[in-house]
Amino acid sequence: MKNSRQQKFADKRRLRAALGDKAPKFSFRLGPQGNADSEFAVSLPFARSWVAILIAGAFFAAFAFPLFGVASTLIDTPDGSLFSLVSFLFTLFWGLGWSVAVLGLGLVFCALLFGRETLAVGQQQLSLRMGLPGISFGASYPAEYLRNFRRELPNEREGTAWRGEHLAFDYAGEAVGFGSNIDEVKAAFILKELNRLFPAATDPLPPLPELPAEDPLLVKEKKLAQQARPMASPAADGGKPNTLGSASSIALIAANCIPLGGVLFLGWDIGEIMLLFWAESGVIGFYNLLKLIRVAGWGAVLYGPFFLGHYGGFMVGHLLFIYGFFGENLGEVVDVSVGQLLADLWMLSPALAAFFISHGISYVTNFIGRREYIGKDAAAQMGEPYKRIIVMHLTIIFGGFLSMMFGSALPALLLLIFLKVGTDLRGHLREHRPSTGL
Figure 1 (tube, rainbow, N blue to C red):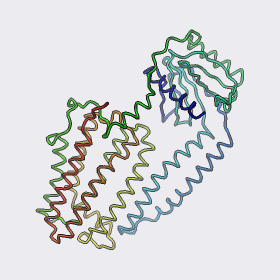
Figure 2 (cartoon, rainbow, N blue to C red):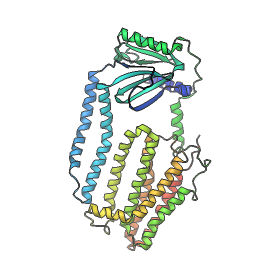
Figure 3 (cartoon, helix red, strand yellow):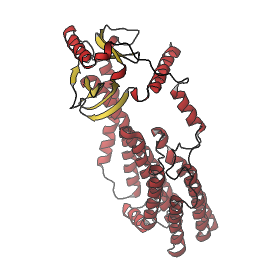
Figure 4 (cartoon, one colour):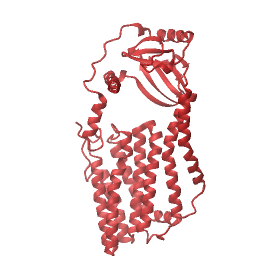
């Protein structure tokens, strides 16, 4: 049974791939479910299962309850110490990540309880949407392959029992059901309008395009498995890989030279260098959020908070580590005030601004200019910064302990900076080299 169901879904994917721009177009929308320019629109009866509503409500309440505890904790503002700030931020980021699950369950619960299904016809296509006023998910079906509008009885084997008596049509030979518990009078009215608007729906189905030999999902998985680096589209510069002479590489090297100047001429110590590179991780996270928004589109409403929660917690943990192990010259080892942290970051602001500009140049020239966002997967993009940052942090920690072992900070700090520049540049060139494809 499971294999049969999987084969059915695989056949649907092959059919949609063959249809190309004539395939159903699925979309998530914020705003009205209907279109103002529709030739015909109707709100359809929507069957509600109180068992499903109660189960969804119970899950929603169970997941939402911990957020009340988080909210009460956040009301107590930090007392000005670093440990208090870290606790506050960690709780905030945890709550932000957890809220994604609460939001998803809340939407499911509200859709089951208050949701509705709408049908609209306009611009030679039929649209079905399901959701709440202001937020909905649905699909549009071009007129060419619409056939056989009809009223159907519920069928448990086809999974339509919950709909009761409902309406249906065939699209490229595939049955699509809509509406639920529709009485005979309303069904006759809707079917009459649909047959008037789509007179070809009673004609023979035109020949379908040849189906691809392999499931498109399997083809995509093979491509992802064979690519050891992020997929990139043909670059604006002809597909040439980034080199040491590329604008983004030069900007990266220049930004990393500022900490070198701080060590040589301004007396920056190991704690200050560690704090600067920690802050650079925040810059990388900021630009990755922009990338995630570009890749995921409206999906970033869910991916974005989860990334901020997870990555923010990662950053907060590292901040405590830096001050605990390398903060002797920055403040008290036991604790540091928030004011001292802000003063340290202000002192490092020229170098931090250089990192912000450097990564901005890379974002504009590579991710946008070279169209690296094409073919990117949102989940993979969400984890993209961790690979580079983990290598960078291991290098920083190794160099930091060398500084402490040597006693003389200057030689070890210079070694640390050069190690960091090398790993940073290598990671940059690997990340932004064009894909060779299959």
